[in-house]
Amino acid sequence: MNELIGKIAVIELPKRHLVVMDKDSTLHYYTCAEPLDVVLQKQKVGYFVKVTVDGDICKKIEYAPRPADWPFKAAGKPFVPRNERLIVIQSCAKLAADVFAITTTPDAMDFDTAMDLIITRAIKDTDTIMKAGEQK
Image (cartoon, rainbow, N blue to C red):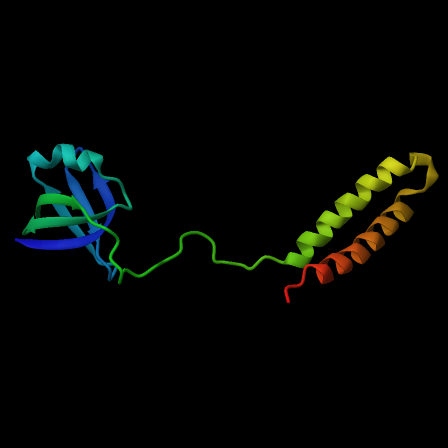
């Protein structure tokens, strides 16, 4: 009998099939013994387990903590750092537009002139806020 610690990749309850991926990303296909039906139903894809196997028949399934040497692979999109300046300028533009809408009447100025004023003020305020927020 052999033991393997790995991550569950696939579970097929009706067929009692279990696929476990080891730390080298190798897939191991097992058929579970009938007494493991209840234990197998509690498992989910992504769980780390220690399986005791005899050939390709799984005899025992136990919870296992994630091994310390397990390679970490981030799922989804790769990390992209935030553009802090863009976030601040968007906030300043929204604030300037809100204040402009409150303090002026629609007939006071045409749209293009109003947008130029709002954007100019947002850029000015962004510079001030970014300088004030620098860590020293």
